[in-house]
Length: 342
Image (tube, rainbow, N blue to C red; front, side, top):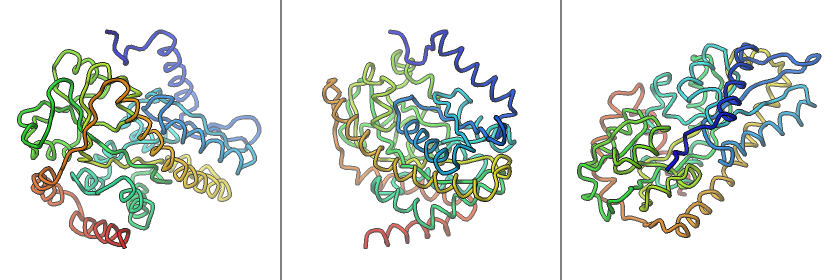
């Protein structure tokens, strides 16, 4: 079976073209005709993913609010690089903007590892409520010392377990299960605490690894599971919500400083409005993906995760102990969760 990640010649050419344009323009707020500013925004997911739809909504709003003086060009499917690469490009000012999962930024902002804690949140809505409030703003502001400006959090992604062959009925079934996880210390600690054998692997290698039995399963959100064709090689999807993965929209401070105050205001407002669009769009894609799974013959099972959460307590303490201001930030997140519940 041909892997989803085998790009044809036209896709490779498009990606190369995007990279060459970015390099030629210096990747930061290229001047167009007259005083028009062109900014390039990259992300790693498919054109039908909520990342892309939200990026396009953001671009539309920026154009509207600036009277066409600022244009945002969107590059999906890693055309501008992977998330770690894009983070570094924003820091050095060679790329303008990105949508990125929080885990890719942890090496740059150590405090963000707190979001790797298993079962930090109880639901998508709870996580989004916290991130859209003062606590979320505090973590966005941590980007500025790294030469980035955090504009908004879009919807978190609910990370659920899926397996190719072996069924999972309870936490004991995870013993020695080879589960592909993101290359993040927090995810490794979490799945190790659950008894699994967490296996860090580049995302673009996962489909083939599942096909060849090199890993038994992985974790991802429902819409990515369907959009990236994992239903072709995996027949069990479990609602385990081990992690809720924040996603940031950010701009290089180098690019930000090239915008005048009115343009900065327009860009920030556009990001915040696009984030609200995304909160609804993610829910729509989430529900639609679960329905598609069932039609494709994928078993979708909601598991009782009480024991799962209990077993990851040690991982939570491990993560909090090693990150800057871990206990204090954790206390703020818990307080925001409690306020949301009232």
